[in-house]
Length: 257
Length: 275
Image (cartoon, rainbow over all chains, first blue to last red; front, side, top):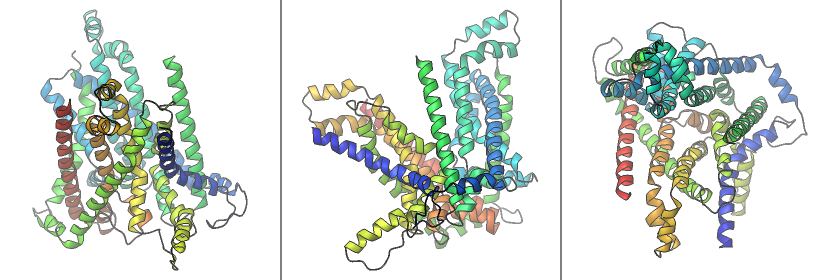
């Protein structure tokens, strides 16, 4: 009994070690004074200083955050309205429009990327921040749709009908009655969209050329080999993710209470 | 509720940016550079040079999926055990890496696998114990790419398995135990069949990105090692042969849709049959 438990713990520990060893190594090496992996030349913060003096990296950071925030907001508006509209459709057209969302989610990223690149170049749009934004909104919309739809199904539609009977316009009914009910779904769609956008590489890679996001920058730097500045950047991003997760966790704990 | 009109922006957006691009891919795949209808792109695709890359990608993704399942199932199973005290705590540690940028996770392995890196040093040390005198290069190899895939996609296997296993009604397991089933029997006859939906969604979530990746092969496999995703990328960004690139994208898309359709039907039948 006891050996079994020890074995199980060791196994889980080994898998976690496999998952975290690369990340921890990156963090340790981000403080290494030597540029080489083989030597430890003492503690330094120079890679972090280099990071904040590197205009290219800072610009990529702004592009990433700006694109993710804009894409998340636009996708949430379109996706939420879409969910409300689809909800009142007949079976036929609804499954047609749901099918489009499914198709978008099931298409491999690389195919989404190249197909949108073809579309933009076909329409003679120069590839850059705005085309990347369009692509990000596109891959986010289905996720918003599918996080809002279940909330709509739980909702009591009589309240909306009553509001209309009492003279509210459909728009007022949506804003004052439906929206508060489905808010949790809207918020989780927004957060999901934001994180998907932050993390995206493949689709961005094909739909922009002038504006680089962090993923694209890391890719082009990593192709040239190891670069301690990327280590410093990874460490900061990793800490940011941990912090974000802790905050989200604490918030949901408080809400549960 | 009369709210159909609200879906208008959604409908326009999806038609413009999801349906239209896919239609363009289909049109490009079926035409040549001058715009005339042709099946030449698909014939070219059957050329051994390209076809072997497709087979290699599929083989590698299958192997990666299998290894993720073999490594991930016990981990999810142990974590979902109802006797583990801080249940739900440890699974967070499997989720955190999923939040980290995919490129950074891949890049991290460069550090470990390059000559002088931790893993490379350790492996060569072990090999020397067994009498090898030459240093083995780990980076830029088949194994390095496979490892990078497993590393990136393992959490995608563990998470659905964990979800299915924790949602499983504990009384089913207790009932089997009360009826005299041993540990092995409880696992093979009760828990494993009930967890199959999780297995299927894990397989889909690992296989799909693994078979289309071009980042992992580029960073850990070097310029010589090519997967199907690399070929597609190359057609669009270097060769500029959109027609052939579109044909390859279309083949990949159709293959994946078919395999996912089969997977879903298989999954449903299994799940339904057991319940």
